[in-house]
Length: 390
Image 1 (cartoon, one colour):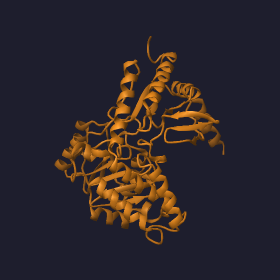
Image 2 (cartoon, rainbow, N blue to C red):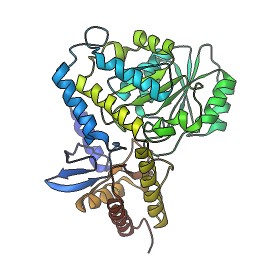
Image 3 (cartoon, rainbow, N blue to C red):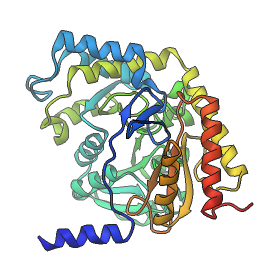
Image 4 (cartoon, helix red, strand yellow):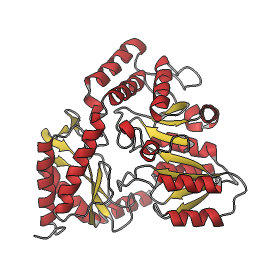
């Protein structure tokens, strides 16, 4: 299998080779790496709920009551009572009639898109949408038309000029995972209503982050009732695992009967669902967590940009520190790791060539003192690598 060796060699030569690094979690913001403490600045654990006592206790109690596994798919034997609680809680939180949980956010996107559209339909997709959206479009066999990132004039032009004999669907990330910016959902909805299209928004990085009390992109723009499909994950701000779709009862019943990634997957473990239920409860009762997250993100962004670093996005805890080349991103990430800070180097194909970056994420669990030290180290590394000038 020479082609495998060739591919891996090319990845290494281009500074694009990847392999997992094992971290031992200590709490919501700290890990051990090689038995040394590090501050985690690369996690999507936005609210720090992975180690919240209420969330952990809920998982333990679910194991004691229901065991460790589900034993089957949701439609056979795997839909234990906690699923009903979680789906009702998600629908209430998102302001929709119903919700359905999938095993992962990736499966929620793939399952929903491939169920909603097919041959004869057209999907209009932002060029920076997540890979799971891209794969959902491919599997649907609908025509996929890609519009320039957040370019509403281009989207309108494509809506006007792309013939469609079936349904139209506009799909976008709410918060873009590698750029940290927020989709112009208000304009997207206006265009969808004008050109008779459905709208689907991926709130994986918006749930618990933006909107009233962390309710996501629809809430952020005040578009309740005007977005047909809201997708989200349980694995980021909600400190568990899985994905979901929220919408009308009719939509959810349709997906339960049509989405293959739901129908043919063994259901999640009870502890996973219980943890997500508890996380929603904590978030609902503690909106100050979202305020702290936003304040931490705004402070860090201000410090880095004031020092001369280029930080893209805005309004979210995802701070892409632009460095350009993959080798520079790797070197800067390694320097910070040696100093006790975990920050991810993001390289192609995740982002376009020449736009490699450090993807810095802050959390509500970070203290001000920790952020001050992290900012100093990041800025110092930027000086050494010529990203900022003295």
